[in-house]
Length: 265
Ligand SMILES: Cc1cc2nc3c(=O)[nH]c(=O)nc-3n(C[C@H](O)[C@H](O)[C@H](O)COP(=O)(O)O)c2cc1C
Image 1 (cartoon, rainbow, N blue to C red):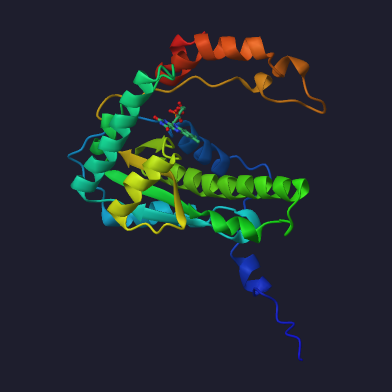
Image 2: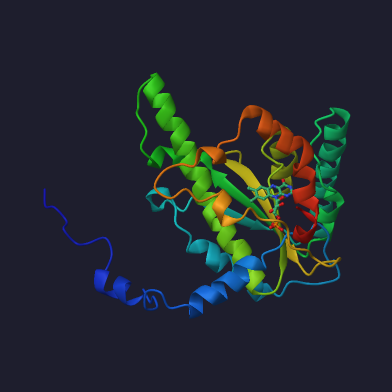
């Protein structure tokens, strides 16, 4: 048997595609940060706006360059243009919203009627079988279970990386965005997949909405760096007790979700 030693990629050509600025140069960083800071969620859009066709390509081109575990690129994007389909997906979420209220979940669920107003509407899917491409043990053991669990994390992080890239590209084009994940449940999958011919093997992981806002967008509060950075060793003050965490959820969560950053202490 002859072995093929050809490299998988033409390294010289691939290297020529990498065009980084001088280390520490601020120009691109500042431009990137401008986009990052202005990636802002809105939950109601100007539904009279039509997204130009090339914007879908520009946005999903950004997603395509995201990193992924084992370079599997385990994502699929379904563009929804049909108002009727958007409406039916919205109906599902509005029902979910009502159900949560009935069950007294106490989560400050947003008004999902805004989904139907989104001019840009993209369903983000993945085939969970891609987890097989990550380090997994083919045996029935506790260790194998832990590897499987980690493989799922790798897949979800990969799809999140692509989703985030798409959101940033949309923000760079001037759009507001909305990242909706309330769709993991089996019922949601069952309600949504047939509308778009999404095969059983696929899982719908989130919905990415974008467009011009119907109301003035506002910047939400962010933790300052000193609350999230641990330099050299973990700052014990950053690890909340159960009580402190539950207290934060009770008293702060609804404020940081729906208020202008300037109104949070
Ligand atoms: C992984 C993830 C899941 C989210 N899921 C939902 C969701 O199901 N419904 C929703 O209204 N917003 C959802 N969001 C949006 C967040 O609530 C929003 O990003 C956050 O409040 C910060 O606001 P900003 O995007 O304006 O910075 C999600 C965001 C992320 C990153």
